[in-house]
Length: 330
Image 1 (cartoon, rainbow, N blue to C red):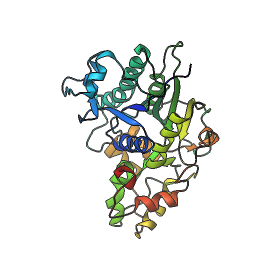
Image 2: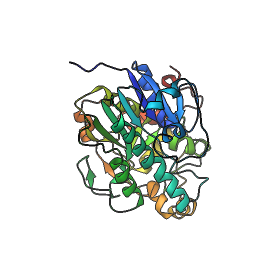
Image 3: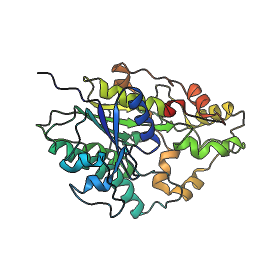
């Protein structure tokens, strides 16, 4: 007997920059969305409410609602579970010390483990568990090309984080739940992420490449990343790792020139590597000063088509001064 279709998706981290885009895309595709986040709302429960059944990792913020009652006996009935939760790695207000590293780690690995535990304990499990990870899994290089089958995850904090982040989604062998991990590149979008941090410096003509600018910059537009999650949820044949990066390979310098051009501004003021290391710490600075040549081989093989396949179209969309995200308003 065919399994009954339940058009509901549970999403961890649904109130953040990427999470909001994924929620919007899911709703436009006909799904109801129940969010787990730090913030409470009519369609959200907090991580505290979820952790109450497993292990309390947060000491405040309890929220209770009619939808939260669904969690009393475990995971609500749903088609899919998605986790995009994670503390902003490049938060300029936070020092790169052991305390912040632990927050970055726990916000990704522990939240994923929690949802995996709920899935494994559920009597009526979802069809698919989709998690996000990062291209930091691959070692920075100016010559190597990385596909989903390339090795990695074993050379520094960020690569080990990506590896453990994906491993946290493991389920018991008897769980008939499809698993997909999307290794995302730099997410471009006017309302958040890197663009939100660099928009005004570029607008006032103070933007430019980071370091030498020769490092590769694997990237994806936030709308394409959100659409990729929906594509994975809908397609029962997709499992394993997908590289969430656009097919257009660029360097940081090429991005800077393109973004500046669409703002009608020069983009020649470099941000020296030494300054980046001073601001963010040497380990965290690698995210900006080093890069990887990442190819979305399996992603394209699944039939996914990018709306923003080239950096010119992505920068054009991100460069508008007066901005209203039509996709998020729907």
